Structure formats: structure tokens, C-alpha cells
Image (tube, rainbow over all chains, first blue to last red; front, side):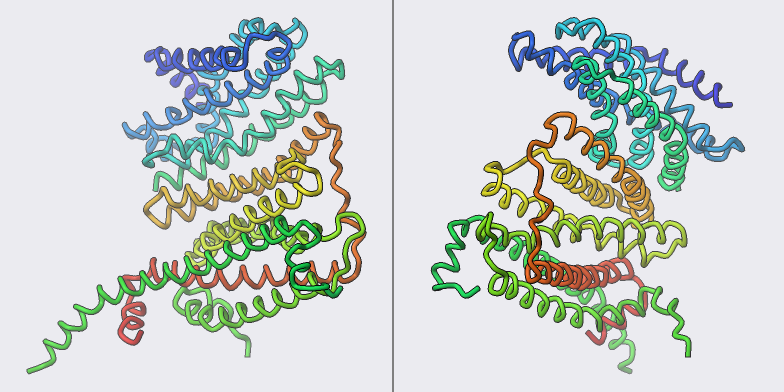
Length: 219
Length: 65
Length: 245
């Protein structure tokens, strides 16, 4: 059942491939805007690189949050999911991970390429990718709560960002902290383990909260 | 802690701007909040009375023979 | 003679109870404010380090306390409203949010005004200031969500979910911000752990804290009554009330 939800969502996403690419290109554009804004001076960019990449990842994953439930909400499959015998939180977990596969994973894969743009040394590139790999699922999971809460509301897009951004801050801090600690030589293991802890906690808690939020929105 | 004069009190050891700045804003925020709450209640009561007035009028008309 | 407390959980009876209690609380709040300010400005000695600037602490610290305290109270009322489906508790939670947001803003404002003479800058990315700012975002998120949903029942429940998610995240945010702060600045700006408090300073701050608490209860009760009226306008007792009012 869980795999079915992911497989179905991936199939849906693949049909409208444009949505997947728009999020990716948004991420690329935002990241390359910063050097234009701040100036080409290399070691300034290197210091900023993790922060820029992470904030861009935050924004792009949030942009596509609304689509997570909205299409199903419109054509009624969401109601069917609510009625299905399977636990709703499992379905929500499936949808959130499908959302991550569609939006989060491409960001992780493209991040090293963009890192070179910022003249990041090889090891911090690795740490950046690892932190993104751990962090972006958390973004999708917490985002699922926001998406469920603002289902079908006018101005939902802006509202999701207002609700969800404060909750993203720990992920942002540990993500950028990991890269910075590794570049300073402290080693990023502490930050990455904290990110892993956040991931495990959100894997357990957020589907339940998002399921509750879905039931409220669908009443 | 007796202040030499009122002007000393307001000067607040040269930090008057900061001290009074924060207290004034706090006072206005609280007063503003109370005013808002009252205003919200008054407009609501006025709306409610508008809704209920016609109903009472109808009741009066029916009762008169 | 056990007073059945559940009588007051129905909006109608709570309305009259709140009506009687609000003046009581507002008078105590006013009296405490006067007392606190009097002690703070006329009894408390000049601080040897910051001379008079420290007097901002009498409003800054209570505001910060209230901002966090009110968020917890709001979240617990929201939780009760969600669990027991009692409309009144969610109404109280909705009524608390604006006052909590105001106190958070006040804490930030007075903190900045106090920071200028003490550290020379309006804003310092210190762990507590940053998490206070994030707390403000949580309040605004709660109010925005409730404003965006028309049907009150759904608004209450959705608000409850975001308030509870917020409460779970506050310690995490505070911990990560503190960690982040020490990582970057190594706490160069160490907030002196509130200067060794002379007795009068402490009493004045506590009195002001109580005053803010009474004030919040009074304002929240008043706003709850308005919300009760708004949501129960179709009921009989509101129209009777109209007849008499």
C-alpha cells in the first residue's frame, strides 16, 4: 500500500514532467542569482555557498508543496484515501516521500554542480550533498503538514510558507552548520547526526500530524 | 532614589530616549489593544442589534390586534 | 455544594462569568502596573554599570515571559479544544494569540531599545533574541491560518494543529539557534546574566510580571466574549441579550 502510493505519485509526476523541472530550474536560477547580486569575489562566495544553496532548497521544496495534495483534492481521490482501511498517516508518508523524490532528490543531485559555481572545495561539496540528502526529506515531511492544513484555502501558497518556514529553521541551521564545520575542520559528523535525528523524528511524527490536519481540512 | 528634578527624571541619565521610547511604545500597544477589543465588541453589538431590531418589530406588529 | 465547573464550559454561562471577571482583573492589573512602575522608577537604585538604561528591564523581561507563557497557554487551550471538541476552549486559544503576539513584539522592541545603549547595536543575533523573533513568526502563522479559514470549526482545529506543532518545535528551535549562535560568534556578546538584582529591582520586575499577567487575562476574557458573540449570534440567548442590551 505504502509503495503503491509512492509508485502512483511518481507515475503522476512523470506524466507532467514540466512540474518536476520547474522546481529544479527554480532552484538553479535562485542559486545562480546570488553571485550576480553579491559580486564574483570568490572567497566571499565560498563562505556564502552553503547558506545560499540551503535557502534555495528550502524555497523550491516549499513552492511545490501545494501540489502534494491539491490535484487529489480536486478529483476526489483524497476522499477515497481518507476512507481507505489503510492508516492515513502511512498514505501521507507515502505522498510526502513521493514529493521528496520528485523535488528533493533532484536538488541533491544538482547541488554539487552548483557548488562548483561557488568554488567550494571537494570535501565540503560532499558534506553539502550529504546534508541536503538528509535535510530535504525533512522539508517535505514538515511541508506535508502545512500543505494539509492549507488545503483548498485562498492564498494557500503564501500561507504555507508562513506556517512552515519557522519550522524549517532547525534544518537550515544544521544543514549549513555541517558544511561550515567541515570547512573549518571541525568535522561535520555532529551536524549530520543531528540532521539524521531530525529526519527520524519527523518520519515518525509528521505523518500523524499531517493525517490529523487532512481529516480536519476534508471535513 | 529621589530624582533631583522632573527634568532629571525625563533625562533618565542621558538614556531618556531609550527608556521612554520603550515604555511609550508598550503603553500604546496595550492601550491600542484594549481599544481594538472594545471597538470590535461595539461594532458587533451594533450589528447584532440591527439584525434583531426588525424581528422585535414584527413581534410587535403581530401582537397588536 | 460542588460547583459543577462544567457549567462554565458552555459559552452562554462563560459569557456572563467573563463579564463579571474582566473588570476585576483589569483593576488589579492597573494597580499592579502603578505599583511596579513606582518601585521601578522611584525606589530602585541607579545601576552602577548602566546607570538608568537598565530600567527598561521592568517591561522587557515580563514581556518576554508573557510571550512564551501565553504561547504555552494558547497551545494547551487549543489542545483541549481539539481533544474534547469544546468550542469555548478553541475560542480562548484564538483570543490569546493577538495578546501573545503583542507581548513578543514588545519584548523585541524593548530589547532592541535596551540593546542600543548597552551593546551599541539595535539587533544582535543572540540565541534568545532570534528565538523570540521566530516565536513572533509562529504567532503570526497561527493568526494568519485562522484568518484564512472561514468556517470557525475548521479554523479552530487547524489552528490547534499548528499551535501544537509549534510547541513541539520551540525547544528544537531554541536549541538549534543557541547551537548556531555559539558556532558563529562564540557568544562574544554574552548577555550579563541579568545584573545582580538588587531587591527592589527584583520585586518591581515580579510585580510588573504579575501586572502583565492580569492585563492579559483581562484582555483575553474581553476578546473571548466578543468571539462568543460573533459565533453564537444565531442563538436564542444572544437575541434575548439584544432585547435587553
